[in-house]
Image (cartoon, rainbow, N blue to C red):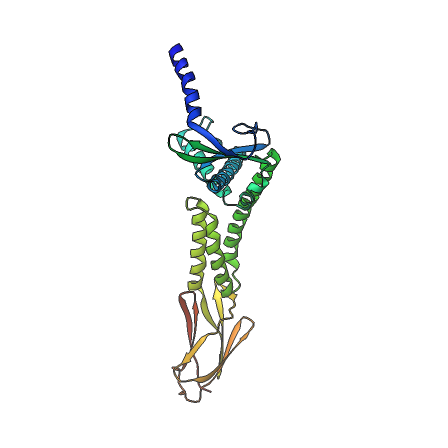
Length: 307
């Protein structure tokens, strides 16, 4: 045992001699370096150049803050931490939830507020290694991060998650009261962007995908319903799930004999006036009113009698 201790004591000076401080930011190393202080994060990094070291340390700061938020959220959630006496399946769910929170926290706005310009102090050294004949920069940062700040971030995270849940519910509720075709168009564009809020292993990702499918299916469920039919004029309305809806889209109108079509929207009705001079006096005369909603065509062929 004495021989081992003696060997270590001999080795320490040799290791120190193998490395040399070429440059440093301060005359002496601050006491907080490689230590810990209440209300601060102390983070270190090493890289071949100082800019790379600063980039690495910023990334580590964000990861540590995200991890702190994840741990606090997890401890306050209904899913207990891994240290509790639970079975393997419960432990697995806890780990997945913690991983999810880390991922989410790293991408919400308050993490992007972290900047090295907000650091309370910093210290760096340029170390030359005689053995490898290369230099590395050791960069250290003391960053303010109080429990109050952590609480604020946790509250922001939970509020953001609650907002996402509320938006999903609103989209689902709105399916029953779609007012117009343009509302479907707008909602599908919003859902496409909204999907980026979730990772694929988040159950809400599948929920948003299903909502998008339901809104696309709404196009197929629209029908053109005949409202009135009189010489030289017919009117229709769009119906979805037994409710009238509107559109600003111009209909494509054709006929086997009529011409000079004059379609006009009057509230929820599309009134089409036409000239039937070239039509015959039988029941085979028709007006075809067609729309394209999404990738689907919706049409109605209305038979009429000549004036």
